[in-house]
Image (cartoon, rainbow, N blue to C red; front, side, top):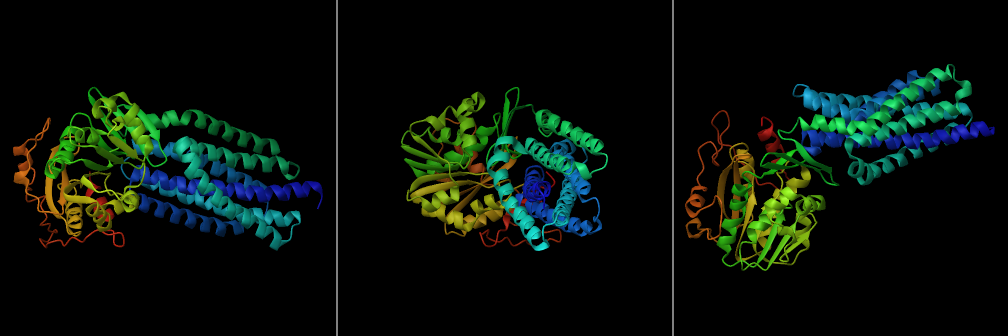
Length: 516
């Protein structure tokens, strides 16, 4: 082999690794897009990975028909991946904002198969070209396959630790598209002497490059305007943390916090939610001193707990430091939480709540569970018998826990499954629900090792909504929201305890909220 052939074959191996990195990034990017826009992360990642691999299989099969003009075929495959993959996130947000319901899911699954198929064609073509150059079949195949598989690992790590947290989904797609295009242009240059109409191919590639660069610098701003249409009020803060997308909106006096598209609070009525979440448990505990808040990174639950003079220590365990940083720096959130997270009595720990309870040796007078709804596997574990058993094991005698448990009217089976799961740990429970205009009718499960007598609980702190009389009224449930759930034929539905081994809630939750 001459020097030219050596350079060409070496770059083919490098190219196989690079395009593999790009392929795996697009694969997980599509899963992240589906999780954020369509919900149910496990379902979306499962579908996109399955469809992408299916597409690769289709592409590998179709590659048998590509036996001539291998370099030009590879170049235009990379051009296609660059333009389709590069604009994938941008167009996904546009379709979600403007197209009829269901179009976004169809579009996402379609481009997943297409990009997967194009990725599946790449590798066989590169192997054939390496053989043409003069490398033996076994050697060329092994090297290209090694580069491809190793590239898959690198791509996954890059997306998780660099691209998604630092660039977001729109810029990441354009950036990876630029990498695919760069590989194509380098291959075009290295093999220019055997390519007819080199200038035309170069112009096509440079034109695609111009579109991708424009998208890289301006696409996110346009996608932001698309995303704005998904929210009722103007977006004043948008951030992609390592764990979730954080959005803050404001319209006059109404400030709203969204995590991955789900509403967490509205400033006009959050007090109804937080007063019921905090005060019944705190008053039941009688002079509580050591308090645990799981979730509650916005700081508002901590503000309510600080109304109790006997409290010495409040531990707030929230997974995402970006949420607590926002709560400590944003003027609107600081007005709501009154700087509670910076109080000397408050310690903020950034850790998974399940892991924290497993490792902690502390006992608490009251445990406030203010976690997001169980709409994926990672959150489901925080609604299991195993998790509630840990809560029971960290409660002092005479202590109590209050657990937010979704809506008993919109998600009746979900609410009573959570209640049954809490009770399965041996704790006594009491069910409450309150009307929160921005959320609707919202439910809570109060739990303690001892009997809970709601008549003995009095609200002695300053509140905007909750009174002794109102508290007693919160324990009554209408016929359409009580635990005697029946199906369309009038048969009683038997609810199962939610566990790590047998998760019941995710499908129940998805079914309950699909029409809301």
